[in-house]
Length: 186
Ligand code: SF4
Image: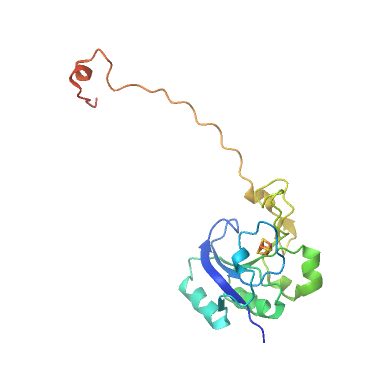
């Protein structure tokens, strides 16, 4: 039986807004997006098998710290991915999948695990359109139970320009402190 392998594991804060996520990047993505930031994980068979036992050990270790588990890829092996998602939901945590497929492609190819997802990011990486923080992106970040698209959570409001500060020198050229080269706090 084929199993999913991961090449990195980290705690992330920005990929799933409002959640602290334990993220696994699986090797073997087939989509070959131009400009992919994870091209070194394309080769299938890289990394370590993500067993349910290992996942459980990480969930125990991070209990109370994380609120979500994010799988980056893995939809190409739907049954193993479904088992991992079930383990996460049984632990009372939210789930998220980042895939380069569109939702209809995902449903046609490997939809069995979709009911176990809280969040789903769809769409290939297209550099000219940008990622989830771009208004022109082709990607969608979806809350699966409601079907709501939550891309707006990634787009920061432009910060107001900082007010210009008036600089008040500590000493003036005519001051005795200036002449003596000694700066004294008031
Ligand atoms: S879907 Fe993601 S990991 Fe796969 S090639 Fe595209 S950008 Fe890379």
